[in-house]
Length: 255
Image (cartoon, rainbow, N blue to C red; front, side, top):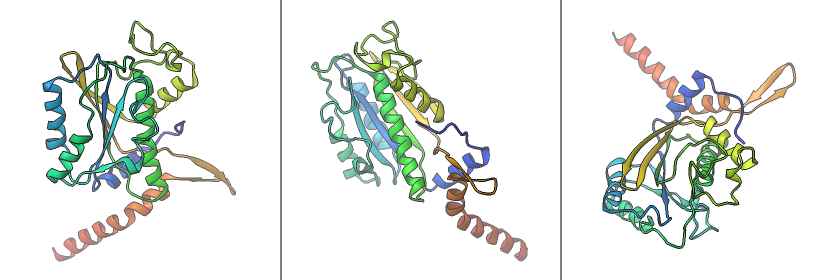
């Protein structure tokens, strides 16, 4: 579960500065069920995103989904750090990503559990940045490109009137299930910004996530507490701030 401790404006700004020289995590989340059936326009727009929107340094993750995430290879964690496809801007990188995209829907996959897909992907992205914080590495801005006809960011306890394809036995049909509550907690904790465009029988949606991590503070002797983020930001930013200050002082002195 995410932390309940909100970040300060200073911490948010520090994380933004830390990520400013880094690539992004970009997840291509594609609904494999037969109700989507990517048409030529959808394929064209996906290729356009890959060719025109990705930047050198980005890491691309391909996350197909239906009733579960990665149903064709359920034993593979498609959001692990090892699953990332590094993007350097070369044509070979574009081709490698295109080859990994599952552009054909499957009639054998008939139910889309959109909320398990959201829960898995948002939690997975949060864990990537949390691991970077723990390893004292720069965090990243993150984005999810959704190709699906299912509703995104809907309320917990999704009813058939909202989305009929959720499997009957899915815990996400229950508003108070542990899985529904955890998904909603991640949605509330992450700074999500959704944009969508309808393409025939499905939507192409982009959810951008500003760089963030979860703060955990622990009581310490002497009425103090130890927290993760402030120490991390000091380690990440002290040298750039020092060099910037020296540059400003040098410029003022020269003037």
